[in-house]
Length: 207
Image 1: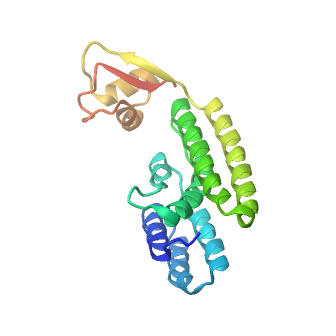
Image 2: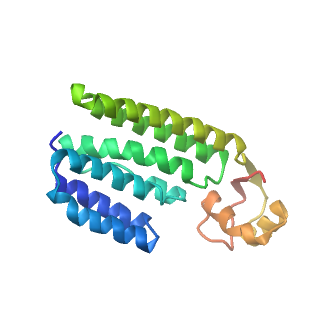
């Protein structure tokens, strides 16, 4: 799989810059990215997967999880290589993300399964050379989906709220949860454009 090293490293660098918040971890990732072009093919592949793991372990939010994706403009062998890294990245990140609701965790599980299938398909094209990678990706995806299923089972379900009139999010948060400080989460989940005027019909966490 003769991937374009520059494109692959650029993608990893952009991910690290937006996801890794620990200063020491980010410095380590960037130094390793600078050194990666001089590695031989086998060492480069191993290092790329290691860097993907470090980045994925820094994910804690749904937004960070969503950033781990194959760029639309990438194709060919480079797309296949990134698909492999995305599959391992979302498998790790999906288990570390603080999912706000049961539906969001279930959606993440579906994405992990889909990315795992795409990564495994890419590994399968390598024939015998990709057998170990295929087995590893398949097992990792299965474990991740199982763990996210447990997270989903314990996450709060979504309820449909109808108010009849538009109210501020702080008022609704207090009425629903007894805590006005949860207004921000209420706004995000409802997709409201302003916290001062909430929709009269929206989705919210049950508890």
